[in-house]
Length: 180
Length: 167
Picture 1 (cartoon, rainbow over the protein chains, first blue to last red):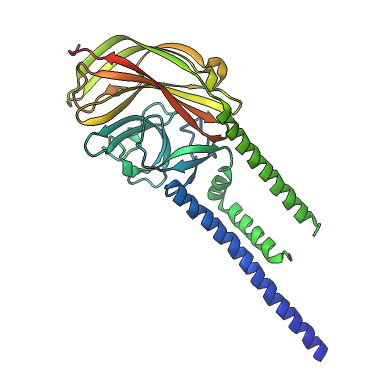
Picture 2 (tube, each protein chain N blue to C red):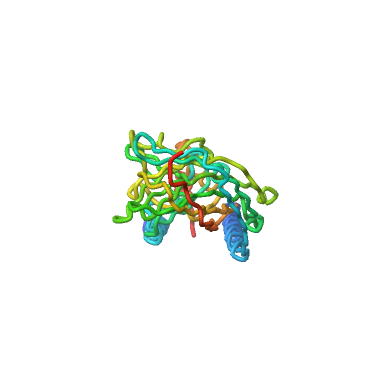
């Protein structure tokens, strides 16, 4: 009986170690992802440094599923820039181009009008009722870089949640069962 | 150690790394292009010029825009977005930019163009400051890459003036 007990003990001690190592490596993955995201937020000054294009309103420049890198500096907003803005009462941010800018002499506040390249008219219909212009506070960032297709991953995951759960489950299983 | 899973994982990681590297290099290579585009704009006619009922000035122009943007295109260029903006200063606003016309150029073959057009977007001031106003017409362009960094620049053409009276 002593020999069997020894074996069980050794398995138990091994398992505890293995479980701990795996928990730590999992934690490392999660925290490093968080660090990268928060670090990007600090560098770019935008609350969401990377956005996925969800609509075709900027085609053919940006298509659904493309990824945009945002930057928010104190530099004044100018016509032609592609900005990401939030309208009061709408949850999903919109990526469109600035076509008109009026900047105040005394306060430096801006009135901005946007339009999607692929849309026929300007965005006043998308704004809140009676809103004619966007102000600085509506704007989350301006697009500076572009990467095609990668955003499809998130689009598929939000539209078909089952795929997300399968993927997370499979990854989790892989982490737990891997020996090294 | 040499199971199917590990090999697949290593291959995928390597492929993604190479792809990311190639995207980075393609975007970086744009920096070696030093474009020298040219543009001319003429205001052919003031179609009408009035004060709207809400008190803001509005003007309608006929424009002739010719430009040669061929040198903006590189192998990493997906399209060039080009637009013409009227830029002027008023007592209330230190900067007014009103886009008058824009276009998307999808290939180098179409990047040398001449168009004759009225303003596509309304030229409306915030207030009533447009009579006798000097303004610049600036041709801006936005180079959208296949991947990577976007480039912007412009050519300022000055010396335009609106008439002293409504018509």
